[in-house]
Image (cartoon, rainbow, N blue to C red; front, side, top):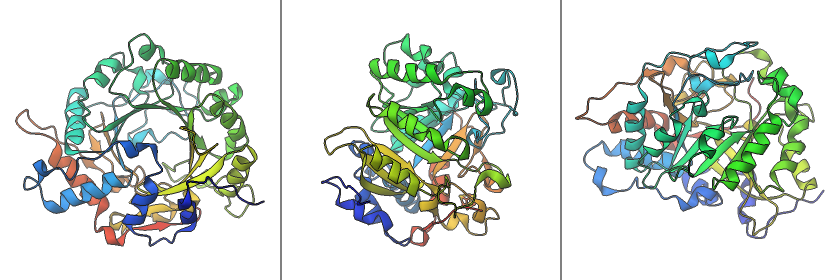
Amino acid sequence: MKRAICNFASAAASLHRSASSSATSAVLSHQFNNTMSYSTNSTNNKHVGKYPQEYLDSFEIYNKLNAKFRVAVVNTCNMNCFFCHNEGMENPRSLGDKTPIKKQGKEPFPVGELVRMMNDFCDLGGTQLNITGGEPLVRKDIVDVLKSIDKKNTRVVLNSNVLLAERLLRAPKVPQVDAIYASLHTTRESDFKKYLGINAGAEQVMKNMVLLKEHGYRVQINYSLGDYNKDEFENVLKFALPNKIDLKVISLIRSNLDKSQYCNPDEEKSWTNPKWLEDLMENNGVQVCGTREGFGGRVNIYKTNDASDHKVEIKNIGRGRLMTDYCNGCRFADKCGEGIYAVRSGVDGIWKPCVLNSDKFSKMEIEDSSNDYKMQILSVIHNMVSDWKNHKFVEGSPQ
Ligand code: SF4
C-alpha cells in the first residue's frame, strides 16, 4: 500500500535517517512537536560563568532534544500494573496486592525540597517537567504542589492514571499544568483486573479524560504497548480521534531483567515491530507527518489532516534508542529498552539517569536554604549527555 504523507511534512523523509545523524537534524524534525512553542532559556546569560560551561552546553542539548525532568512526588499508587517501572524507585507493590494504595515506599526526600528543585530546573530554562509518581493524584495536596511550581517558560506535564481526577476537577484549572498525560492501555475492563491490578477502570478513565479536557486541560493518552494489549490499540485510537485527544504509543520499557518482556522481533505482528502499527494507522486515515529523534529515541508523528491540532506519536523501541557515553560499559546495554530518556528524581531521594541501570544511581543531597539545586541538576544531566558527538541510536529489539 502506498503511504499517505501530510503535505507539510517533508521531514517524513527522515524516517530512516542513519544512526549517526546530527543534533541539528534532530532539532529540525523536533519542530513538528507541539512543544515547539515552549522556548528554552538555557542560553540565558544569567547562568554563564556561574556553572561550568560544559554543563550549560549539555543542558542546552538536553533541552533542545526533547528531554524531560521527571519528578515522582509520591511512592504509592491506586493501581498495580504488571509492567510498572515506578520511575526507578523501589516498588512497594507486588503482583496481586489487593489494596496497592496502602503500600507506600520510603519517602526520605521531602516534597517541599522537590518543589525547590523543580523550580530550579525551570529557572535554568528546562523545557519540560513531568510530575509523576506512583500516582501523583493520590496526594491530597496535589493541587497545592502543582500551584507552587514557578514554571517560567517550562512546559509542565502531569502523568496520571486519572482515576482520581476529581481532585483536579473540583478546583479551578491549575494554570501551571500545560498537559495531562493520562494512561489508557486498554479499553477492556477485564484487562484492568488481570494486568493493571484493579477490578475495573477503563470506563472511568475515559470519562475522566473527557471531563478534564472540558475543564480546560490538554489531555494526551499514554498507551504502553505490550504483547497483552496490542489488539486493543485500535480501540484506544478510536476513542482518541473523535474526542480530539492526543495519543502517544510507547513500547513497554524494561524495568527488570525478566526474559519474557520482549518477544521475537522477527514475528510479523510482534509488538516490537512498528510496521503493523503504521498499517493500522493508515487504515484509520491517520497519516505520517514527521519524525523526531533525541532523548527517548525516535518518534514517528501522525495526524488525521494538515490542519489538525492533535496528533498520534509512536515511540517504538525497535526504531532507535539513544545511547551516549554514559552507557559505555553498561552490563544491561543489550537488554535496555529505553536508552537515555530523562533524568528522574523523587521522594526516594535518588538521581536516576535511566531506570534500568541502578549501578549508576546516586543520592540526592538536600541543600540548605542558602543554596539551590542547580549544580546537582546540571551535573547529572551533563553525565547523561556526555560527549555528545559520540551519541548513537541503536535499532532492533532488545534481548
Ligand atoms: S546505562 Fe541505562 S540507558 Fe544506557 S544502556 Fe545501560 S540501562 Fe540503557
